[in-house]
Length: 46
Image (tube, rainbow, N blue to C red; front, side, top):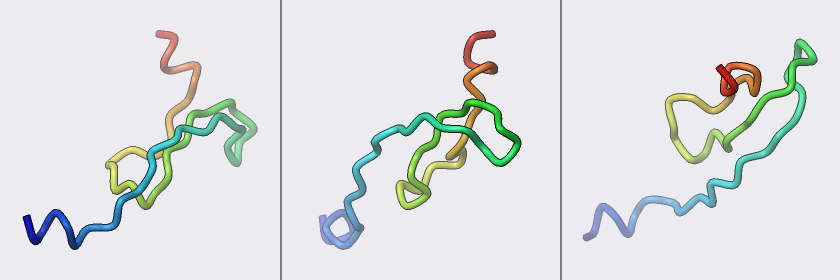
């Protein structure tokens, strides 16, 4: 319980926007500590 209480709580609210290449992507906040924080929306359609 102590370990769980010591971690910061981060709201994982996905955001859609263009990446540095201009491709439409889905972004997760890096603070959420996921391995992948950005993925192409085109890749999700496949």
